[in-house]
Length: 183
Image 1 (tube, rainbow, N blue to C red):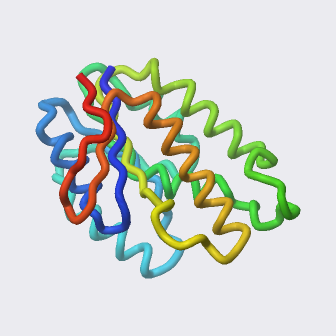
Image 2: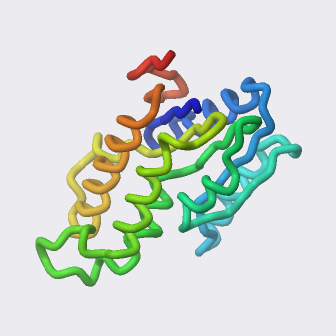
């Protein structure tokens, strides 16, 4: 198993880098996408990503249930790109705005179950898996409690995924910076 995490800001080139690595892998490429087109702007973003992908790649849409999707799709002869962990996390934090002040995401059973299932699965995944995630902790402190919760959980998730991956790359302005070189 080979696992990689590619982090970066919005429009940093992280998806492009993941797609190039997948294309160069020599393996059959499957992409697990986590975005949902809940408005016209997001639909346009999704369409832009779809247009950028080669036609021969298999795409699986899973805004939730990522561990189950990965278990079903990952194989020794495949490179799986998960794009992106940050949107998946946002989907899992649905209902977090109703949490009492000071109560974290650990109070959301669906979040805990899905996060823990993904983290437990990563070491056992066959083939090559490339996770794409936003690094959201480099900006301003969000104004709202929900924004701060999201930022904190994204940072924790990125750390946990990075600890389980052989290779970690940070992308800024389209340029990759290898944080963890792998093999």
